[in-house]
Length: 57
Image 1: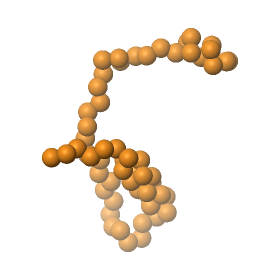
Image 2: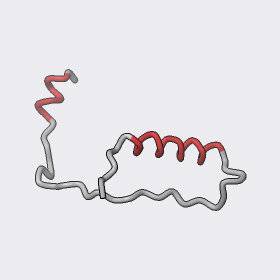
Image 3: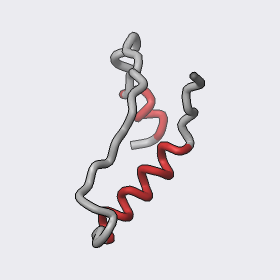
Image 4: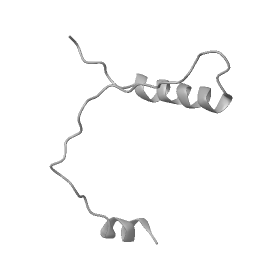
């Protein structure tokens, strides 16, 4: 399937839907003995959400 064919088949949905700003918390038992998979996931979350602008009070 070419890009042109894909473009013709895709359409937008929920055009009036607006995202809601909210806080994200990562809750885990302890900073000691954090498994590598969890540490990698937490690092990913920090990297992803640090680029989101913080609301000014």
